[in-house]
Length: 540
Image (tube, rainbow, N blue to C red):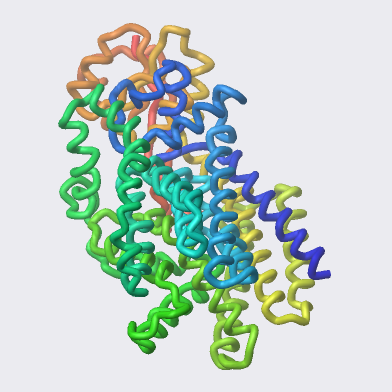
């Protein structure tokens, strides 16, 4: 029965991850898909562009992988997301190997399971961000570097530095932080000063520098030294200080964000983290034999950096989630493998079952009230999940039953989000229907511009995407051209009417952006009041 349930859990997780691939693109994911599309159409793999302007914020790793998949398999949202999903699976394996290296086989397997079934990866292998690639590369780098300290094999050092380079290539200089914090704090606190200051680390300069090179070349060619200054300084320091982006001042943002983004393991993960910190403080730093500081060092130091930063987002946590779940896994093994923590085992068990019950309740609230579903395939999926949950509760081994119950409840929730909530929400997200109308009705010379719309997925879905217009002057310039279509809001339409612009035809939509959730929109009783007007205008 246990073997069957673990097999079923694996299959259902794969179904949910596969379902992620077919959710339409919006937000940053749409913008990144547009950049990948531009690479394929232009043949230029170095100079990145989006809406006909230079792109200077992220390295090429995601765009190269997605463009390569576009070349091989054709363009679609699923093909764009697939390489990120595959690289995430590599990250799950790397987390298993790192956890096994630090705490043994069982902890490694459990850490990989928790990571793969977490809301963090279930969400961000759909809503694509570079952080999934960075987290996976970082897990690989730390596995190899810690393996090097154990075996002294040069191949582990080389692969570890390549992993750090891939982390940088995924998202830029921030990719250095966790590997440096984790390895540096471990060597410092275990008093391996010779290792910390060994000349071999000079090898990192050319290896990691090689992964910076494509971005440096591309930005310098298009934007010169000003572009490089923005990429390395303003884009990073500016997010920290808020001078470029971000106005968050809540120092506990990532603490309460953890409660949902680490589901279904939130309480276990936070308990393990604070327990591990308490253990280190209690033992002090006099006797360090057999102790590791890779996990706590990487989590705490990076966590402090992003907590004081003014730019905050849940996916900024993603790079430390492998370390968080390794700690959580080893604490679960300690708590339920012996009799040393009976009260903690009872308390965590209650919280975990309570969390599973909440996820099941939310699933049916979503499917019966939020966006009532008549999809028979979804209800079959939900029935299977519930049946497996019942069998999981009958497992004699408490830890196994707890793990399976948590996984099946998370699968049910994420399946509900993918197969019920997202289709319901996309019915109100008008950029994709607008692009479909444009693609069908506009002639081959027509261009679609966007004004007062942040939805850059238009530049992926439209057959001939134009410019991202910010000002009325920019809008006034483009409407003079022939074969122009504009996607805009009430204010943009009113501006064109004031100027006497002739409309061949225009289409109106009731719209709500998926990237801006609100209780008013989610509540069916008030949903209509949350909608705004958007227009697809053909200029004569």
